[in-house]
Image 1 (cartoon, protein in one colour):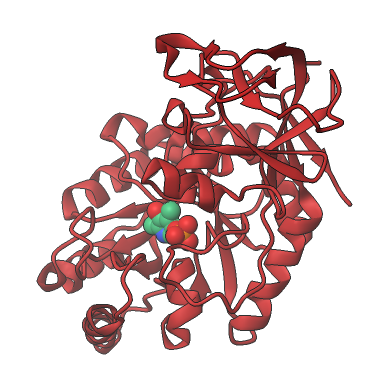
Image 2 (tube, helix red, strand yellow):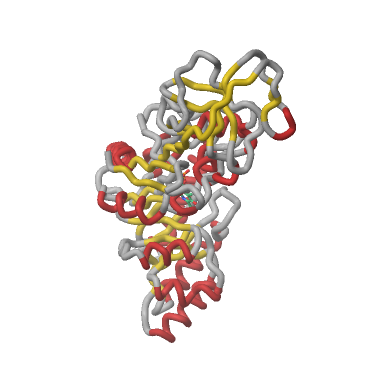
Length: 369
Ligand SMILES: *Cc1c(COP(=O)(O)O)cnc(C)c1O
């Protein structure tokens, strides 16, 4: 197996699930976001471990992602967070995927398909209370709920919305969304319709807005061991699940002013040792880390020397370290390694993207303790 590996610490995942369970009111369900191959961690293994740890529902972004989980034998409810195309409706029935719906037209198409194959599809009505992405206009929600009620082959399994302020300090916009959402739910109930499972909270809302937990929460990033933003108060003690590791493939001693890597952007200041690591942007270790990132080797951090190549990169390990050929290198992971949050900072992005970027070439190795 390739020496460059993503070690997936399932014990940390379980720890993070326990932390979220303690935070939410008793009886509130967890729908874990496992879209994008579980934020790069591997959807099947993550889903199995999460279900064993008490997660009741999974969230994906594509019909294919749900199909992969069903083909692996995962039987729990799976919600499709993105809107499917009409051509995907038969697959929703076949794989028992719960779509979010935002229009009467789509509900009617689902009903037609249900009539054709004589089965009922659970849907969750998605309302756009301020995210500006998908969801019906708040004014249209009651009418769509009515349509769902009138459709024999479509069942109102739930109602949901989403908060855009995942990296804001201030909760006031989210509070106004909650008020709007509550009013819509109230109206739908007054019309004699059971809204089903009510859900809204992503990781940030779980931390900051316990009143928005409703019947189910939809955490993603927290369960992978990171906070949704830098501004977020660090009160949860979650632990990173992914650890990206590689090995030193070559070490050389070089004189001062030796250029290192493409573009010769790094020149040694003194006589030093340069280690080559078998990882690069082809593995999802971003080229933005060139001359800026650090790696952990034998408990100490060393700077990346020069550009990150597609398959390799170099580190200046100095003359005096006892680092040897084939030693392990940690690119990111639980501290004291650089965390995905630190890497994200350098790349001017968020930890979500750092773990999602790790490519298929990197085998995921699952460890339980
Ligand atoms: C991705 C996603 C989540 C999870 O968001 P985190 O910030 O990772 O907790 C929740 N709900 C929806 C609709 C999503 O798309």
